[in-house]
Image (cartoon, rainbow, N blue to C red; front, top):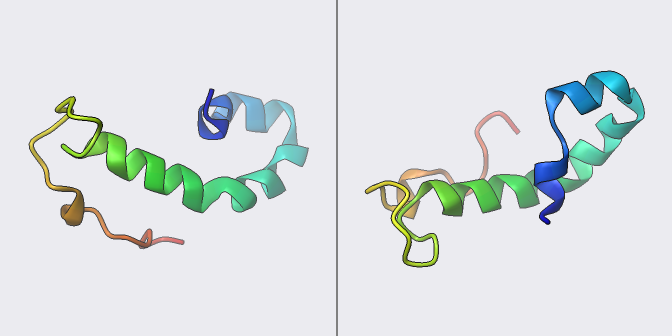
Length: 61
């Protein structure tokens, strides 16, 4: 299981000590999501968007 998928809003509210962990894995999660949201996801088309449409570095980082 990817580390990114284990975090969600509810878990963060239950355990605020996880917040520093988000900063540690944020870039990894963004890159995984960027790939999954594009057509570059292992040949399985999630969308018809090219991966280049998503910025390499998150804007709000």
